[in-house]
Length: 118
Image (cartoon, rainbow, N blue to C red; front, side, top):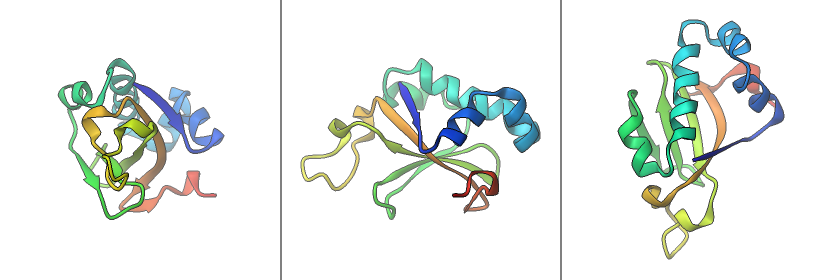
């Protein structure tokens, strides 16, 4: 799968292990592992098998989000980044067809992580 990032700062941070380690400490390894699992998958169908951490969908958001939990408090929020993952009405995502994700937020207890605030 392809991964895009909502900001240059977020992309740069996610590509540097030492930066992730400074910000997230012990869970930086899990963070990097999840990004690698995403890159190694061809679609969300494959990713579901690889993920070793819980995930859920937040359909109350527009667009619908995939939330991957790194720890009990830290979560990664992704949106589908390809249009053919949408159902025929365009209102919800058929995640099985998603091949591109965009990391839009890193959340700490449901609040956008301070380091990535605008």
